[in-house]
Length: 292
Image (cartoon, rainbow, N blue to C red):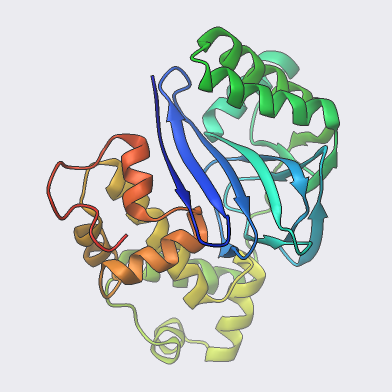
């Protein structure tokens, strides 16, 4: 059974963010964007985005890259990136978000890779793999579980074989990197009422600019941007558990539901209410989707 919600805007933009029950651990997005701009954000899952029309531009870490028809944008978990139209007519894509554990299991099963598998390039020119991504979507839309699962495994194995390998991050060694990790822990534990940068730096025994620089080097974004991303990710977990958007907003430190909706849409591509309906986790209350 497929669950999904499609939104269409005045500019002709449309997005369907959904799940197919026979592909657990995988989210799907089919969208056409023109004015849409994704804020710098991360995902806990992998991203396989097959461009079918137009061009998507995005910053991947500190690089500006472009992806067009027949190409796939590949993003590893926890990797900062943005997204916006690279041409006036925008871009259309079909995206698969497979859970990291799924990719690891396929890497171990097909390539004997043990450890943290990932991809080395943010954009690959592989029309056949792009067709496989589209095929996963179409099979899911048709309710063909065997084809959807088979094509997902085929495209993941192909991408890993041609464009991936083991990714082993180096442990932080410098004092700046250790302070950045400690600052992240403080922000994650106190995201509802975070300290100022000055207070955070003082508590860690460093200067605000030194902490700002170290944090950007470690996580690809300044602390305030990282905190917004962390709040959205925590809100997604709450929405998945059935928490109404207004309650999720308060629980993660957004001022209200519209504040959550604005940042959530800029990172995920659809509002919280639409996201929750697609996953079938919303409570059936009259106000559950208000303001989304």
